[in-house]
Length: 428
Ligand SMILES: *Cc1c(COP(=O)(O)O)cnc(C)c1O
Image (tube, rainbow, N blue to C red):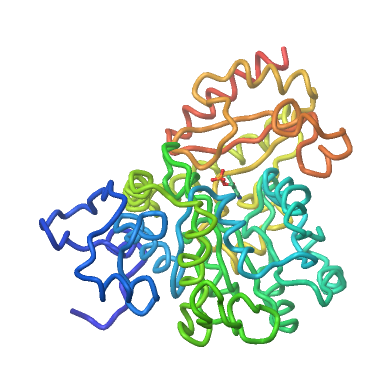
């Protein structure tokens, strides 16, 4: 054995997985199981008091889900991780210990559409609010922070425009204000971007996308860096006595694992947004090939974006992997191995041509998803962004003449041929 830290490709296969202690099974078994037998009454009491770590009930912990948590924490370089039922659940679970009525987050205005709705509408029912800012305007980020702010939120590679966030610049602002920086790393995955190394406190994921990678699972995950000082006076849920555990103080008791323990012992216990073991198993299988798939997703996306960029029927292509992108320079610092495979392009012939293009593709699937081995296409203005005004659609990068693609791992020439024939029919 050498002293070298195992590489990403080794960890994506091995982290969190060991031969099953009961049977020797080499693949992580699906523990399709709800409750766990206590050794005796003292063991049960110690588990319920959080004095001993173990399995009680699968709403809180499950061995298959625990293997995935350990793998995600390792791949992101975090201290711990909590898996949950979807990417949107992960966002609520990440904010829950930090927030309370009257408190707010400062967030990038370049976000997944569902997140814009969650942050601008739904969280208000909890008395929380979000201030949306252009995170390239660091003075605006700074100005949006007030005494009630409890986190800064952004996506590493933002959906759908191929925008790359300057994570170290936001981390510096968060640090100055004693706030955690939360980064949604769904589009990049830990293979392309490592937000914790760039200064993030928490990383959230939709496991539904590239991590599982094949369109079979809805899941989410929060990874904690373990480096944040939760006892700075702003985060009483983590620093002050917790009545539901006899006055236990999470930060004092669990140190760098405070957020992870709180997420399981309070978050999953009481919000119940639990990931199921079958889903965790599929995601573990998907992650085994993450680097191979992401390399291929990125290479295909570069090839197809370059082909589209030179096509006279196409207007603008927004892929950060293209040297012509204004965000290309940031790639070297934020996601040096590639810019993932999600981007948009516009058609000079406008809205009607976009709708016809979608109707005439054969290999691309017309679905509202991304990060699948299959190539996906959607016309946002007539689907996901249909309820918005044209001005709002343009601001969201979903103008009427724009199509969004998530490039899969098929033969790139086949994908180009499919787009070429559909473009011919759409613009005839
Ligand atoms: C899909 C997605 C989400 C939401 O994840 P679900 O698993 O669908 O709940 C959040 N953020 C980004 C960037 C996404 O792509």
